[in-house]
Length: 190
Image (tube, rainbow, N blue to C red):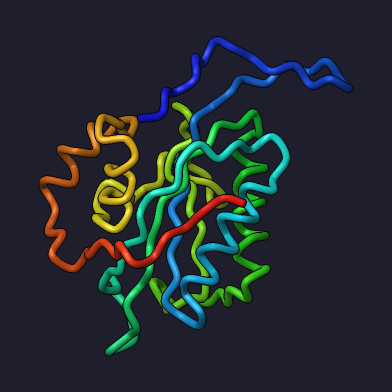
C-alpha cells in the first residue's frame, strides 16, 4: 500500500518560491472504442509525463459492462485506476485530463455515457472539494461505480472517498458482477 503524503508538507517551486501542498490523486481511466488497451497505456504514459505529477500506483485492468449506455450492445470497457502524488492545483489536473482525452480523439456530445475512446476522470484530489460545472470533487458518481472502486481497492483497500466513506464498504454495497479483472492485461510506467 502506498502512503498518503502528509498534507502539511509543502513543495516549494524552485523558480518562484511559491509553496504547494502535496496531494494524493486518484484518476480513473476507461475506454470502450478503438484500441482500448493502447488508449489506457497512452493515458498512463501522458499522466506520468506530466510535470509535478508522480505516479505511485497503477491498478490491474478490469473489463466492465457499460453503465447506462445509450447504445445497445456497446462494447465493454477496459478500466483502471492511477494513484499519484502532485503539487498541481485541481483545476490544472482537470485541464490535463481533458487534454489527454483529446489526444486520444475523445469525441464529446450531449449524450451521457456514450461510448468513448478514452475517459480520464479525477476521482479524488486530496481532501479538495469542488462543485463547479468544470470540476466536481470528489467525483459525484465514483461511490456508485464498481469499475472505479474495484481497481482502486486493489491499490488502497483502506482508502476513503471524502463525504462518502471507505471504498471497501462502498464496493461491498454494489453489484460488481459485470466487473472482471483481466490478469492478461498490464499497464506500466516507462
